[in-house]
Image (cartoon, rainbow, N blue to C red):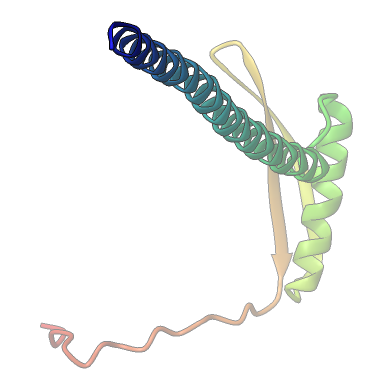
Length: 139
């Protein structure tokens, strides 16, 4: 009887020790797994942020290229000539006869400004606004 009681007590102690060791091992493995899952989620979020930043950079690059394409060159003489040519073409498209664009030299606060005077003859079509029904009478 004495041996069976000790054997039973030893078996209980070993079982409790195995359960405790299993619990701590499971907690450690679950913690490592949870940490890995959180790290993967954080990395995926970082990838999405970098892709969004990259897309915004590509969009900004395209916009800058469009603005540079539409803007005048840095050389004032070339800029003046191109703007003058564009202005004459626009005046001809508007239907003006004999469009004339002249250069005016202006300096304001020590900075040279691009000044042009333009003349032309013809009739320009005007857009008429429709008056609102609730507009006040002209008195």
